Image (tube, rainbow, N blue to C red; front, side, top):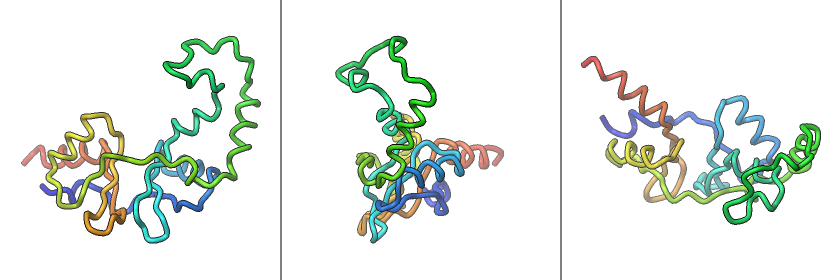
Amino acid sequence: MSSPTIYQTDFPFLDETETVGVALERMLDNRVTDLPVVDASGALLGMFRLDRLYANLLPRAALLGKGMQDLSFVSDTLDDLRAKMRAIEGDPVRGYVERVDDVIHPDDPPVEIVLQLHRGANNLPVVDRDSGRLVGMVSSRDLLATLRAGAGK
C-alpha cells in the first residue's frame, strides 16, 4: 500500500485571497475543521484552522500564557459572538494561516502517515517534494478507511 492509495486528491482548499466568510462556508459544506491554503501557484502556505478563528472570539486574557480556566464572568452572549464573527468574515484567510511543519510527500511510506496522525494531526497536507504544490490531503478517517478496506485480505 502506498500513500497515493491513502490520500485524497479531490479535497476542499482555500486560495490565500479568499475571505474568512468563504472559508467558514466551505468548512460547513465539507464538514471539516481545517482547510489548506495555497498561493496562486498552488503551493501550500499553511492551514486555516477553526480553533484559530475561535481564538478571535475570546477575550485576550484567555489566550495569555496558560489562559484563564473559567470565563463564566464574561458577559458575551451568543449574539455578541456572532457579531465578532461577522466582523472578521471579510478578512482574507491569509491573515489566519498557520504554517505547518508536518506534511506528507506522495512517495512517503504509509507508516509515515500513521506516525504523523498518531502525533496528533487531524489532517495532513500532501505536498509535492520538488514544487511545494499541494497535491492532496490525508485524514485519520482516510487512513482508517484504507486500512479497513484491506483488512479482509
